[in-house]
Length: 167
Image (cartoon, rainbow, N blue to C red; front, side):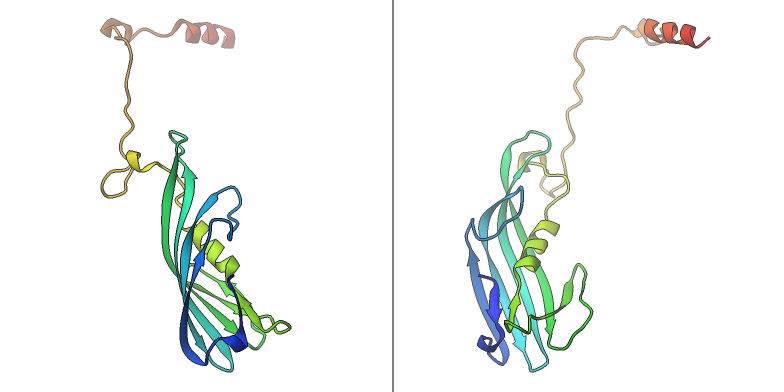
């Protein structure tokens, strides 16, 4: 699905769009609903540069209400596959990798999976808990019952008993 034979990639500039079904990408505990990956290749004798854009939908569970909701991921990433042996590295914008010399192919599946997972929010909130700018709305802090004003200065009797144990 996201493996490409190097000799099948045209020289210089080319592009390809891959549609991903819900069962084609394993995101662990999360449910992948589907998406597409638009890949731009630039191939020379010494390297293959891939720049891809991921548009995917992942089903998340809200941390506040435990309701399921769909979250859209739109992210760009770049991977440079080198023919000679290099030290592999990666950051938030791109990575440098060696390509498999035995099979003469490049594999983008792990990079696409990581791009999706790294763009999921740490605090998963259902859209109904977000304002127009995508920021969390304030949680309602409701108090049930009235507190008499003369009780504010009174100390809880349980604290008094604990203080007696300390002495």
